[in-house]
Image 1 (spheres, helix red, strand yellow):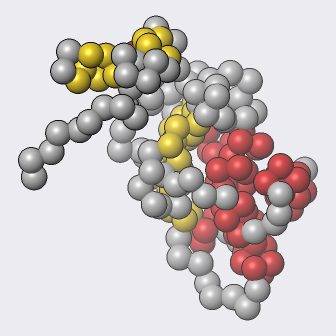
Image 2 (cartoon, rainbow, N blue to C red):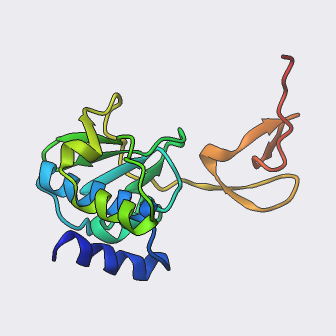
Length: 174
């Protein structure tokens, strides 16, 4: 499949065509090329996304990264940047969207993102952090205030009670 065909497939999942989706599709296609990866059946490919925008849907469809599998990790920084990791080889790449040329239409912008030379669309560098550990299973703890079951790392102590983050009253002095 060419980039446009892959984009069309992703738009079926996403619900519409937009430049944001094109960003994630193109980043995924380039990550496949750079890292020699394919669709991730489990956690062999990891994507750390620095946004929660449309492009993330392209990554899910093209690379098989998902929050439920634990190989799509949100590190929200408000940037159109994505880090991809190949667990088998240890290779990684971070792709950052460059400023796009001003165009008249969304379709022209989509086409530019999908078809322009790689170096015109993305800056490539190494991620400045290590490969995240594999997803872990945690014990559940019942919140002593609301009674809802919560994964252990998200439990806090509040006046000696085990409480979920929603019931926890944070203490700030500054």
